[in-house]
Image 1 (cartoon, one colour):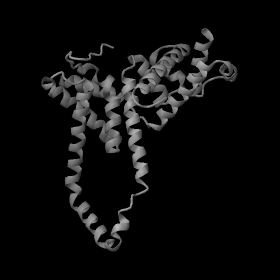
Image 2: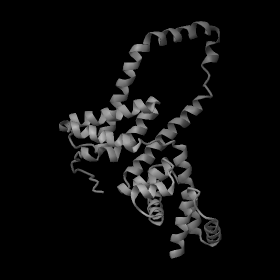
Image 3: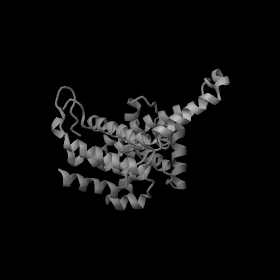
Image 4: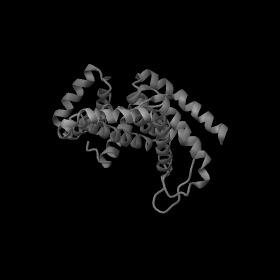
Length: 192
Length: 75
C-alpha cells in the first residue's frame, strides 16, 4: 500500500503485475475483443511488452496506466490484423446497403433506438473498470476473498479452503473489503 | 457498538444469500431503529447490484500462474 503520488517517480515491479493488474487488464480486453481466449493472450502479450520496454518507463505515469496504454495498442493491432483479412468484404456490404436504400436516405438517418443499448453497454464497461480499479487497491487477501466470492461465486467453504481461514474470518474480511469498495466507488463518480 | 458491527456483517452475508433465518430477523428488527445500519444495508445492496451490472470477469487462477511462469522465463 505504498502508493506514490505527486512528483515522486513511479517504479515497476513486474513480479506483482499478474496479481495486481491481470484482472483489470483482462476486463478491458474482453470488453473490446469479446473473446476470453484472445483477451487472455493480449494480456499476456502486454506483460511481455511491458517487460521488454521496462527500460523506457520514465516513471511519470502509474504502473497500471502505463500497462493499460500498452494493452490499448495491442487491441488496435489485433483489429488491424483481423481487418486486413476482412476489409474487402466489409466495404462491399456497405456499398450495397446505400445503393439499395437510396430513396429513403433521410429516413435512414434517424437515430437508431438500439444505440441506447450501446450506451448502457459502455457505461457498464466503465463501471466494470472502476470496480476493478477499486478492487486492485484492496489488500491482496481482501481482494482475493472478495473476487472469489463475488465475481467467481465460490461457496464460503471453498473460499475458506483456498485462503486457509475460518468462515467468521472470511465474513469479516469480505465485510471490510465491501466497505472500502463502497467508499472507493463513491469517490469515483458512481453514487452509492 | 458491537451490535451494529454484527448487523453489518449479517448484512454482508445477506448479499450472498447466506444469512440464517434468525440472522435475518435480527437485522430486520435492528434496522427499524438504527438509521446507520439502514443506510449501510442500502449501500451494500447497491454494491451488489453494481457488481452484477458490471458483468465482471476474472482470469482463472491457473491462467494467472501460467502467466507468472511465462514472465519469470522472460525476466
